[in-house]
Each structure stands twice: as structure tokens, then as C-alpha cells.
Image (cartoon, rainbow, N blue to C red):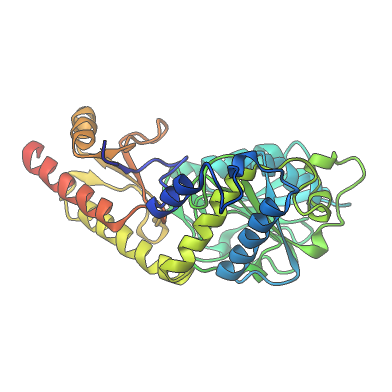
Length: 361
């Protein structure tokens, strides 16, 4: 069976070249006689894989030397708890931007540990806008400012970085990491679940400024303590070794594409083609997000008549376009077009959308 164009929001499409390399090395990694899945995480083979993956990530993201890179389990959802447990220190409040489904979950977990001050709330607009920071209600005494640069469900994305001053800026970059260049030095903590732009599910990347590692109290359990993971090179327990290996292959693939800046240009072109098709449909398709807040990674769109949704999805599947159904809270369709989605997939989708409109419009 030939591969389809997979628009899943996550676990998401992986680069074909990466899958092929993993396939070729599955039974025997570089003459070791064993699969990566069978290796001791403390053996020289896997230690070399881990070291190379971190080196490549540091290179493509230009991560400063005063930041630790952690390869953890638990998904980004665990970070909703780990962030306050590790960063509050002797403070009792933290700032949160509430701009979508995932930031809502971060706020809820934050409230378990502190006074979670919501500095901006876009729920009344159904998460379709991103108000300028001039209207945010920031607290200069907050332990940190948390935001979600890209919301996968609503399809909204910050095209700017909030200014936090002396307050550490914390970002859940699960669905935007590696899609464009960022200045890591502006952040205190960046975290990201792997299953969108990095690799298979089961791995979470945390990039943390070293001065923030000593804020956690003795009551923080070892498995939730950033410093313990940092002191043990992310191997306090057995890490998700195969997901770590796959992430390393993705980092190498990004380098071969020309790095993150080159990926950003491709991503802008892909998203532009899809948004142009939506906007030129005369209302047959509609993206509900304010134009300056549209996501490069997740593009929701609504058909003029929801009774056509099933026909659209059935026809798309026959064309080799899968996982286009929108989240139940939004409805309609959603195309997740992460780094590994080839531009050809966007072209096929746009052609199908035009054909469907000509038949049903």
C-alpha cells in the first residue's frame, strides 16, 4: 500500500527519510547486532546516540551554553505540573496566558500549586484572536509567565514573543518547536511533546536556563525535579530510548533541509497555499481565526454547510488525504501541516478542495 498524506494533529507525520533509516537500522544499529530498542541506555552505543541528538538540537536551535536540554517522559501535560513545582520557589503566584485548549489545561494545573493569574483570556472570542500584550494584566512579582505559542485545536499562533522582563518566560512549544527560528535566550523554560515536530510519542524535550534549576523545594519528587534530571543527563530512570533515537534522526533531517530557517520558509509557503485556497473559495470554506493570528502548523476550516463534512472526508480519504476531521470542540476540518508534511501534500489537498467545491458548491 502506498503512503497517504497524513494531516493528523499528533502523533503526526514523520519524514519519510527518517522512517526509512529507522527501518534499515531496526534489527541492527550500525553493526552493533542489536536494535536501538534493545540497547542499554547506559551502554556506549546509546550514549553516543543521546549525545549526538542533544548536539544536533543545540545546533539547529542555537541553544546557549547556559541552558540544559532534558529528554523526559510524561508528555507536555506533565510539564503543566512540573513547571510550577520547579519554578515557584518562595513565590505564590504565576502569570498565564489563556488562549486555547492547551493553555487552559496549563492554567488548571497551575492553580493546584499557586495563584494562577490569567493575564489574557480569549475564550469569549472562541480562541480566534491574540490581543496585543499592552492589554495583558501582568504581575511583576510572578514566578514566571506561561504561554502556548501555538494552539493545535483552534489554530492560533503567536507571531511575536511576549516580553516578560525579569520574570522567566515559559513556553509550551509542543506544536511549534523547530517550525521557525526562535531566540532561546528570551525564555526561561521551553518544553515540547515530541509527537508533532520532533518524533514519536513518549518523549518530551525541556530546555531550561541553568539558574532556574535550584528553585524547587525538597518536597518535589525526584521524577518531577528538573535538577535531578539535569544532574543525571536525563537518565535518572530509563529514558524513552527509541523515541530519543528517532528524535535524533529528525534533527539530522532538519539539518539536511537547511536548518530551522529553511523549514520556516517551506512552512510559510505551505500554509500560504492552504489559506489562500480557503480565502479564495468565496465562503465555501472559512477559517475562523483572525488573519494575524493564524497558525503555520494547524489550519482549521469550516465548510459552508456542515452536512457536507462527511462527503468531504470520505472523498479526501479516497484521494489519499487522511486525518482531516476537525476537533469536536471546533468542528469542520483541520489540516496539521508540520515540518514533515511535504509540500506535495498541500498541493493535493488544495486541488481536492477546489474539485469538491466545484461539485458541491
